[in-house]
Length: 427
Ligand code: ATP
Ligand code: MG
Figure 1: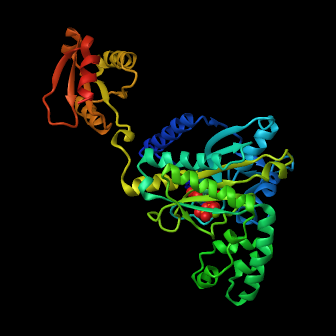
Figure 2: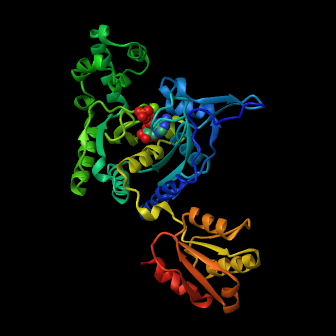
Figure 3: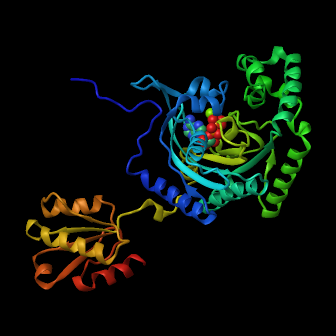
């Protein structure tokens, strides 16, 4: 016998039991984006490799070791998208969405990174992201943060997440700071681990992000970017925090928050939780004013974020705050008592779907004995079974059996079934 083929490590199936929570999350996101006037953009999952190499940065973790890159049949180097920002910029430029106008966009979909799979970290994972173009902020910086905060409130997560903020300053200020930082690290070379030594020349700011406890003391003494900000960036940051204060959004300034992607400048932020262990960042973003130009467009200010859907769903499940109605239980299971009434059952189910479009109705299919039919009704998870036997058919009636409550079965006219169900299911 040949070996069964299994899913690729780190890539998950979303099974029927779990999909209602995802649908709940996605519907909350859709409603939110509409309320803020953000428009959805959908881009292909595969792009030219150069798009990511040029935007995310050659010496970032993503580009160095996490991308799924392959050669197309005609020899082009293609990559499964590891994130959404580069594609959004590419599409916006390609279709003239950045020409003399502002954009507020959002997207959702799978992303791919070859990382070590663990709880909250997968090789195919899903993000919801927001990207805005043509707005310099800090008002729009505050808006995207308020938008994310509102989602936490909608989902009941607001008290379980912390907003961390930092400013990376202008490119010039960051370059000067980089020199100061490298000089400091050079003095403490003996404490640097292998990764950090490698980053010392390529991406020294990322060393600040290290979780290595042996480096913690040295890092806590490192010069801070906040003390090296240019005047404009400082004012930008102060205006942003003033907006957040006015909106009643608490935040923690984390001078070591640098983000893993090269394209950020000025505002960077993360929403973190301590309920998920080390995979605690549920949403991350910031300003990337240089990226459009870097990809060949006109200078265009931009700010956005991406959130990890798996981590947010894990958080909802861990805190046990998924509302019952989001579990999408079936309302009714419709069945004939035997083969002679199967046709009537089908007609009744269709009629109910006409009359009550919001009702979840499953029809019994596959025949079987009365006993096995009732068993299937029960297994369906529906609250009610709607039964038609010979008698009910003769009299234009239907029997309502309560599958979840200890209540007497009752018989009603088919003509008034919709009204009866509406009141029964709202009880
Ligand atoms: P981390 O530091 O956890 O690796 P990151 O900085 O690589 O995160 P981003 O590129 O900013 O993450 O992506 C935004 C969000 O997407 C993260 O905050 C996280 O919630 C989610 N995310 C990133 N990588 C993964 C992954 N491999 N599996 C699941 N979710 C992920
Ligand atoms: Mg990462």
